[in-house]
Image 1 (cartoon, rainbow, N blue to C red):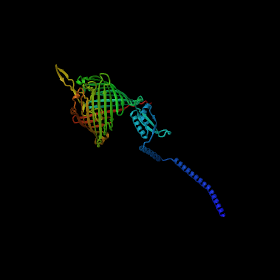
Image 2: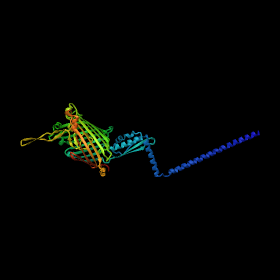
Image 3: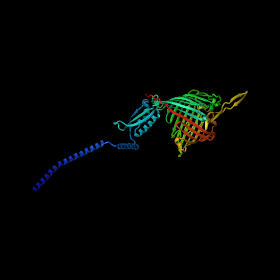
Length: 536
């Protein structure tokens, strides 16, 4: 019993000892928690002190650069979703808001950062193309804080301070022994619609004179396509080549005008006269008045890297014209189709490139008995002249080495009878070039840099070229006698070489033909800008 009592006392004492130890452990844990809190407060104070310290400029720049690199890396590797919240337009005091909004409409439809950047680039180019702003800045800003994943686009424009501009130039055609003076005046954004008002005057000694005025709207309210209207008065003298003068007055309306498509309507009153009284029979039959009511559609693709000296790329133009869209019996009824194809590729040395091209065209009158009718004389194809076929996309008209209208069907002019001492004699007075209804031209041109570096820096280069072409008649039953063999045998060709000197004030081409000798073409222009500001 004594042993058992002792064991019970020991157990009670051990239990009492355990109960005494429990509160002592709780006190230790509370002390440890206080120490941890004190350490965290000290660390926060140290971090606050570090934040208060000024960050070096180099570190700040490095951090910003790293953020931008991360952003660009993310944009280049994945599509970042983003929505445009608002488009803000600033700086336009005269230009209507709806015009600018229409040009930047694609920005509102962007759903990612990549699409937004691409749409902003296109909108910037379209606003510059209007020609009414000196500068355009598009800024992408963050959207409201309560709308994450959104952006505000700020379009800031500076309207041009010189709405009135003008230019003047002198052009020569040595093969026709003629010079022309051309000038124009333009007024931009007169009504605030991005409109362009212009008047032009062209005076050619002994050949062509024209005065015209027009207006162009890039878009008008709900109509997305540009609107063009032009009044013109044209006078052309073809007495030396075809024994007639042409006078045309009318209006043209541009219905559709885009990068690849153009649709225009033309209504003109045309008069053909022969002051010399020496025209050939086919020319005399078409003298008098005529009404031209036609619609013209042009499809164009030009992927060449330059229009003056292309070294790679291709171009294609198709032009369709239908005349006779009026009930008047004097209305000229015809169908005219033209094709132009150009292709250029580099040869890999001295900036050398090969250009070749083909142009063809066909003309037909339409109506009852159209094969027996003659085609309108001014609408026919005339080959010749020395305009560069590399730079020209206007159908089969140019053939280097031949005079203006110096190729194709001809007819004898009226003979002049002179009376001397009661004796009569007939004097032959030459032939008229009457043009054709089917024309085909082709060319090849190799351009290259000249060896001297001073010529290369100035853009002066040389070229070798070869041309061939033919034109014939199809109307008045002439197509019955036409065959491929006859058309091929009557082809005319020329070849030569030359040097082209382009500058800011003039462009000169010096070409040499083995058969006809040296030919020089000089074009001089002097652009000028007139400042007209209403600032006080």
